[in-house]
Length: 147
Image 1 (cartoon, rainbow, N blue to C red):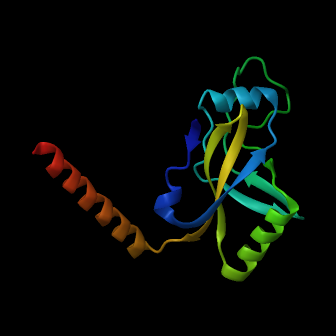
Image 2 (cartoon, rainbow, N blue to C red):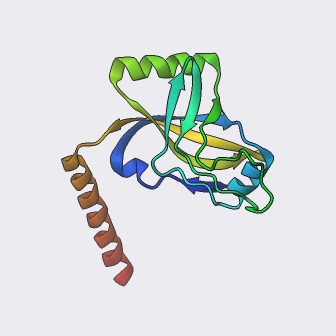
């Protein structure tokens, strides 16, 4: 079950591969995510001192009146990956100049997971080409459904 998706990710980036990461959240943050209130727009993943972090994601409070004093909606959140996956991601980032983009938050066995895309940024003309392909596919679909 998807809780939220990063809608702009596939528009702005060519996703080369994906992987799954756990997310360190507090209890009230999990409730907020499960109600679909989290946003990944503008968020990214960065590996700092060998630890992966989700930066810029917004998880609004579940109950605004019942909240810890130190709560920050856009706080950096630690990701849970194996050492092997972290080393692989570091190698890809340095060698190929790719970006780590959060694609979606979803449930897996009652646990909140984050799908990370290893992506390369699209140029403006690539974005236009993608939009053209979508328009053509949409018009074909309409033509098929009218008959």
